[in-house]
Length: 367
Image (tube, rainbow, N blue to C red; front, side):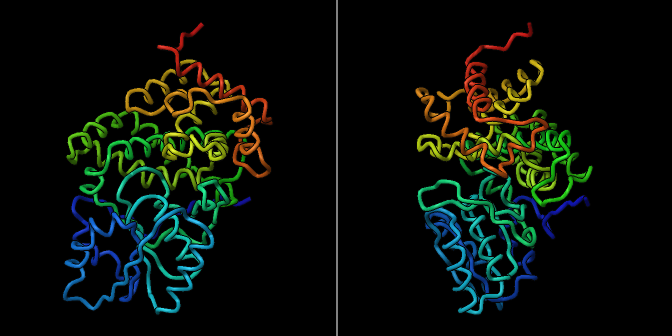
């Protein structure tokens, strides 16, 4: 079996670079569709009009709402073809970006991805997560390539709600523990190949920089300023985690998170918030050492990631709901099966309950 690493053709990060957007998208042609939410249009249209003034670009604005669905991606791809669009740009959060990557896939047009928050590791990957109209996970859409261009304006990120940055840290935190599990089990990565050493090391860097700069980056966004710590965490959340998860592989944390989508109350959380708790659950499944559990739980508490079902808004979650989560998590081809041992639904339920108890403790004690 061969090894494979996949990444964007170009990654650009810096302060106020959205004002120079036209410098980085020459490969997209001159007739562009820009997809944003209604709120995004209000925030960025004046800036974009200035960027593209006195240029040969023709811009079509498309307002996004709802969930990223296969039907929506196909419909917008067909619209792009009808209109003679040469490239598509997504500006916004994960749902907008997953939709734009889907449009690019079905239309075979180049794309530029511009996250306005670091809430997940979606921007750089060649995977789009598709949901149904109610927000329940449907399937992964595996794309032919990563985005042509990923552009991250760190000033924009610093002005976004701090909870979004923290959620991105939760998603990035899982990257190392899942990639580690895939390497231990000899499992394939999300590309269907074996992970390269580079991919596993990129995943390890996620946890390294989160521990070093995560809390400092949160403080920077609290103050709405850009610091070196924030620059490091933006790169961690956006690039290292994205390439790390896709080329390093996923395991139980994301497998269980998919199970969380069957419980309506848990769907109210950000993806990375749920993933953080599911990472603790994976460590319980793996019988990780207490010092490692302490380190992960302490980090989560320091930046404000959930460590209990109460933190997740489900203090009274039922055994029936936990069983439904476990069944969804353990379906055939779920990434939970990339753990180096067989996992059953009963094991997942027990691990979820144990993780909740650990999260409630002031500090886990090594016995």
